Length: 193
Image 1 (cartoon, rainbow, N blue to C red):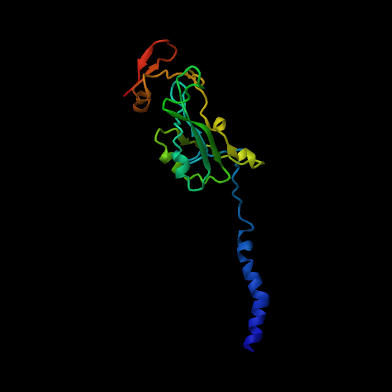
Image 2: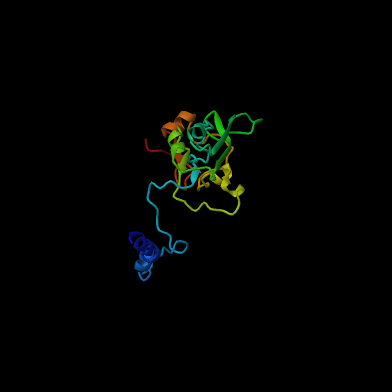
């Protein structure tokens, strides 16, 4: 007798009980995020798309040390360093250091946006922005090249390659002891220390 009542319970009551959550929530008001049309601001320390920063004269901060690539647990960063030179016969100077990142790629198919790469960067050349819309329709477009990652040129900056304009040597850059041009003026003004 117990087996027949158990089978009736299994046949009739269990399916109805299983839909209990569905029946309880079916008539509640739906809360929908209007994401593409109403974008909520991210947290200030949100880890989004990477950016390669520049010095105030337009030279790149990246010195091609490849520490970011070594620190990346997902092996998503590829850096190829090349030498800077002030010789007129060479390519020119792209960063204030001895080297610069000639090739810089981040594969966002692999990147886990952990931020270990920005912690490893000795010159704060690599930072993370609040941009989070990284989806695309092709795999190739999710491999960001150096041109995609470089910060835009601001007023007063010059497109590299060019000689160092702020200070006498790379030590001035790294310590922030350079004479920055005053906005809208041709003279120089001592930067804050």
